Length: 74
Image (cartoon, rainbow, N blue to C red; front, top):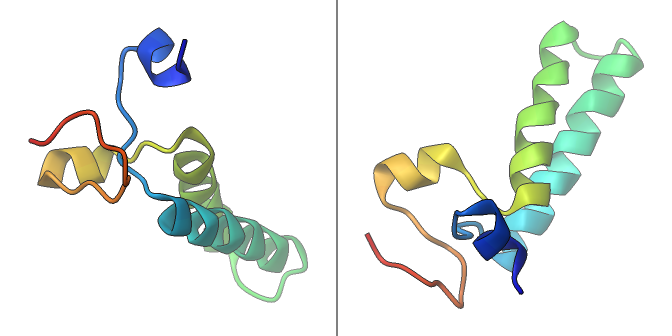
C-alpha cells in the first residue's frame, strides 16, 4: 500500500522538485549552522520536509502538482 494512501493525502511534489527542495533545505541549514547567513537559514527545514514528504501545502492551495503519476487533478 502506498504511503500517500496511509496518510490520506496525495503527492504533489515531483521527483526533480523534490531533489531540489531537499538540497536547498540542507544547504540553507548548513549555512545557518556555520553562521554564514543569519538564523533565517533554519527556514530550510520547510523545503526539506516538503521534499521528504513529497507534499507541499502551498502547492495544494494553488492547485499546482508537479508529481508525474498524479492521483488527482484539482
